Image (tube, rainbow, N blue to C red; front, side, top):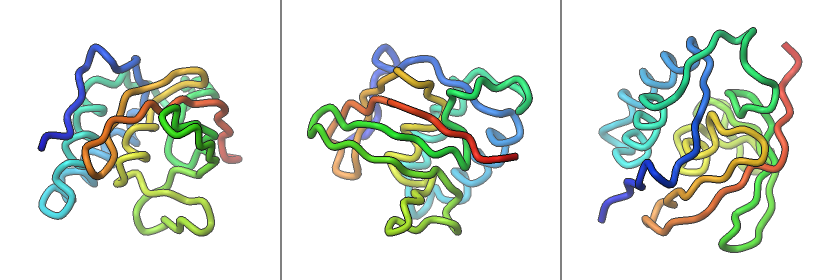
Length: 136
């Protein structure tokens, strides 16, 4: 079972250049235990438009952003903070970038949606409703 999705169903994504480097290292380090998520994250990094942090629009999901999104398949709506694995705490609403949802949301802008697989390979449509940046 493959978890890859067609690039034609993916919107443009943006990443902060320094975060992209850190995320690539994280994904490469997780390949052995999380091969599907690592591959998906590396694909997103490869196709992302990289920008400096001070050039990133405020409505783009970056690390530490709080993002409100909906899963259009189920109609569920969630607000989560996208964090590095060591800071993840699902009960506190902090999800790791090394989860399918985390890897799918990074780089999206408000209003964008993406067809994205879950851990079982089932495709979902994730739509970003609102992005809030942390105080920097």
